[in-house]
Image (cartoon, rainbow, N blue to C red; front, side, top):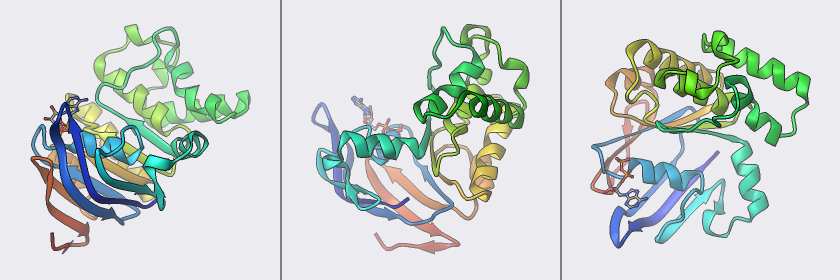
Length: 229
Ligand code: ADP
């Protein structure tokens, strides 16, 4: 999947969260967005899955301008994506396994296959024992793993993760980082924001964007190459 931002600004309440940025994300394996809190990382990720539109400029997702994408095209785009946030919420009245099956139901996967895929992802994350628990019975870290399972169960082409190891204990962070790394090794494109040097160390080959005050101050496309800004 290709992403291109052309002279993009995003304003919230007339304050710029992103300020006239242009870039193409070209690395099919992984892109990592770093920078201090408030730099605009979440805002940039939200543009990439057309959750928000730029105030100025254009975002192209696979060559399509996100401002003119139809509802049908957006649905099809989201089917190929898995999105996970630090505060991703689960459906309270559904068990872990039912939550994980949600994207498969949307993708009209048959019940038998849904069971197979959701149990397989639970097992690969080492949380099979949580399958019948409701969100209120899970710790914060366990909920996060279930949310990650839900984001990846339908084998999306691309996973977008906003600070996926923020606020997690070390064991859960490692489970999340190694899962994302394995997905990248298997050909899934990973785009994530993080403050964690530990998580960065899993993706040495990634394209990296460093944001500060809504601007890209450094952009390396991976394998040590930097772009002039
Ligand atoms: P980061 O992810 O790097 O911490 P964000 O993209 O969340 O940064 O935020 C960038 C700036 O935009 C911050 O000043 C933040 O307060 C502001 N901002 C982000 N989202 C909103 C919103 N929905 N409403 C108002 N201001 C927002």
